[in-house]
Every structure is written in C-alpha cells, then in structure tokens.
Length: 119
Image 1 (tube, rainbow, N blue to C red):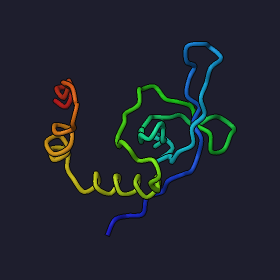
Image 2: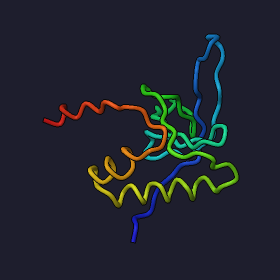
Image 3: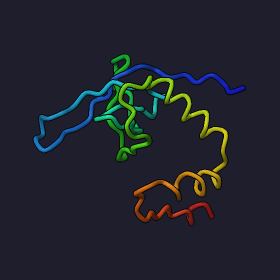
C-alpha cells in the first residue's frame, strides 16, 4: 500500500513577464513546500517554489523553469491525477524512469542530463 501523500492546496505567483509589473497567479497542489503542480491551458505543470514569508498558502516561483508532466488534463480531478503520478513514480527506480518514461516521451528533444555529477 502506498504511503499517504500530503498535498497543500495553495497559490503561486509567477512572473514578472514582458512588463516588470506583470504577474500571474495560479492555484495548485504543493508537495513538501518545495514543488507545485499547476494546471495551465489544459497542461499539468510541475514547478519549484519558495514559501512566501508571513503568508499562508502562498508560494513564489522558484529558481528553475517549469516542466509539463501531463497534457490534455482539462476536466480531470487534478489532485487525483497528481497523487497517481506521484505513486507511479515512487514505484519505479531511476533507471526505469530514464528508459520507460523519459526516453519514450513523444516529441522529446535531445536532453543532456549531465549525470557525470553523480561520480
């Protein structure tokens, strides 16, 4: 049986964009106060975040870019989908992920994972 997943329903501020005063607010599910799953234009994104000081349930976009982890999810129960993805990933090792998921992602370009840092 899978361990329970603790997800916090929260908001994330993303930006600034083209204009220094342009920001967007997204609602999503935060995992371990470090990562948020958000829905944008039918795609499920995973982003790294920082907790906003002195504010509950508000996070700021982190130091990395985002990653689309699922497409065409409009109308789905997002929390249920996030929990299913987390449980599936928990059940596989790194090599399985590289071979079964990352290598076979449709429309994926070449990646340089720079795994020599594991030495």
